[in-house]
Length: 331
Image (cartoon, rainbow, N blue to C red):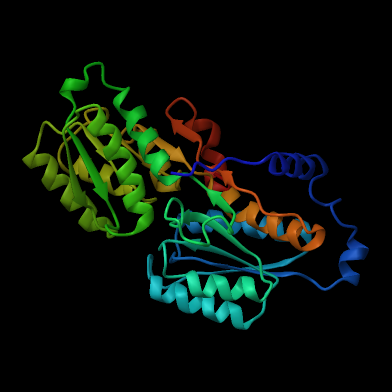
């Protein structure tokens, strides 16, 4: 598996932008004299807390750089046919750059290649199903997001460290979207670590529906009262599984419950003690940095760079530090 790391160029550019607040990258008079750059962000999301943070990052970068950037939301999550149609529609608008999630290893090959053939740079954000597949586009598209498989592996490792005796662990690996690359990759990393440690686990479809998730987790815990570790993969998972834990009559700390994304709902459950910790893939950067990259590519002919945004964790020790930022859609 290819591990993504920020390049020296990335670190240098980001440091420069931070120091100068992005406003000094281009003189406003120069910006008015030039054609205003237009970027489109196509993804597999419906409206929700997580994509709203991505949008906030995109909007902030666009405002600071004086470019137009729009994000296309679908009517529901993981509608890949809808995402493909949205990408095709974006191509017809001939933008200066396209940001996209790539949740399938082959489905978007044709439209991405069409964009590249037209001279439209493409940045992958959040989900990159091309990694490790040998797809000819794999090394052509820069990726800004978390390393999914490695992230799942590390999530499980960190969760297991909470137990003084590994022989007492019984785990549930929940999947909100079985078959989707982002979900399977994360779960696959967790399962690899659990298998290496000889920790028994079951894999279960949680559903994206919150009521279904609560019901399924609650029923599972009632049937398997010795289950003491629950992992989910998606942004709604910690909240939904937490409600299932509570419905099963468990108290805070009875079950080590871990997952991804510091949404307001997830952060609330962490503060109550039902969620143990969350991986923060920093979605703000997944909206902000692609706009910066496209701007640099168009203005200065720089190449793209890979950035692993998913290196942070939030638990009861630091949740209060970031809680206000969660409300502001920055964390």
